Image 1 (cartoon, one colour):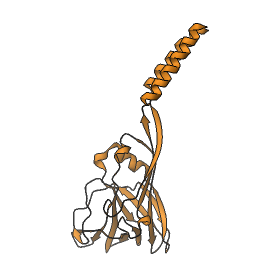
Image 2 (cartoon, one colour):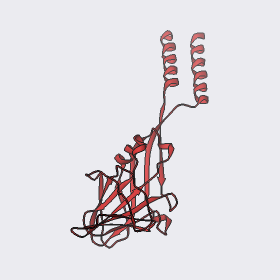
Image 3 (cartoon, one colour):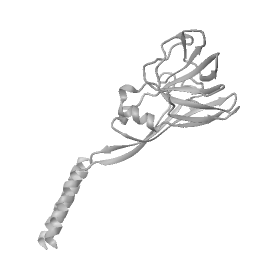
Image 4 (tube, helix red, strand yellow):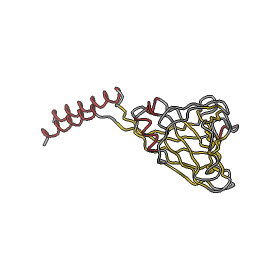
Length: 223
């Protein structure tokens, strides 16, 4: 029995040295005017141009068939600490309101765009044809609305060179939401991320475990 204990202890010790631990963590991104990248994008039927309204305090998302359309463009710069992480959950929170109750749909942008001064003609980004998340915006009520961006953020973390942000569209009448330029900093767009990341045991912990394992082996031998 004693002879069996030593190999078990040594095996466990070797496994410990080669192991990594998944550490859970979370972060909240809520950029201001200097760090945030967002704009409203307007198209007008019969006009070949697209117009970028950046540096404004709100997004305007609206669809009027045979008239005009407003979309929202939003991008979060993800910190380096997320490199190699596994995204467990990600929630976009927008403080907004709607003229009538409607649904806001969010699609992943697939090409470059930038925030420009209001009224600038620009080349809009390409984006997914199917929306990845959506939520109802209540009418005539200023409130926070949450959108599940877990899959989208996971894609950006795995493909950092393809983080072009998102396109937000209203299925019907006017939707508004505060941007990173909104006057009240507490009401600007928020992105909450829960993630896990593999962590190698600290050298001190490894050394202490090694000493403990060695002591157990020596004690067994004395017996």
